[in-house]
Length: 383
Image (cartoon, rainbow, N blue to C red):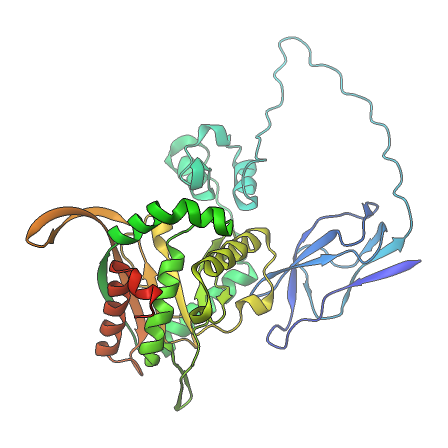
């Protein structure tokens, strides 16, 4: 029996989706709940699983096509068995002295980098990686090629839907918000000491590592409760004050930045925060975030420090009115009790909508964050 595979019902805020990747081709066997296709909306990548066991009989739209809710995109013959592949005669061994055809191994690269390496015949083994754990990124490959390590090709590719949406929202923010940024610096000595002292028992008890983000998220939730205007948003001529801290956490992915939301952070423990962030990060990397994970949010935290940023001016994510930027921790000499000491310091930035948030409110909010992080026991007491 032929079974139709349809586009999932999209939320009202999402009009259509683009077929990003087919994971099967016509004639392939499929299993129930096996992912057939990735659909890219302007907010998230959706997976479409097979509803039955069988064989993929027909693909109605190729990669790059635009589809809408409930549209039929494929047909599966339920219960069918894929035909056995035709036997292929093994190729003859190359004659002595003949040059073997070169092939670039891109298996360890993310999709964008793998495509670039293959097109430019760049061996990732010849490139110094600057990503996490020394991974080779697309930027590393581009630098290698443009610096003389390869050819000089150019490639024009359309923006992904997610990247288009990011661009639209950034321009919306710049054009519709009177944005200003204030800075401060934080001595993280006590936070680092607490992590060193309690990190191991914390992980044994809760099954997750104690990171920095939980300290910042908890400090932000406490500060938002005391400085309500920073947690507010503009709706026409009205200001909406939110009596809860739904904090968006910026997560970088291969397709762009996404901001899943931690709900009611004021009621979450450090372990709850760390677990939620780790879960979102994993889902973001694997394309498993749901639309509802990204909707809402009253405040955002972004951490450019993971990539080495020392200072930046983050852009507010409308309709929110403020965003906190974290940066790299650097040991610097500072004056402390009349003595020069070396301390792990971080610059923090608060970009805010100056239409409703005065400079005084922004500065007091940043000072509150600074005081909590430099005295982490205060946040445990909600001070």
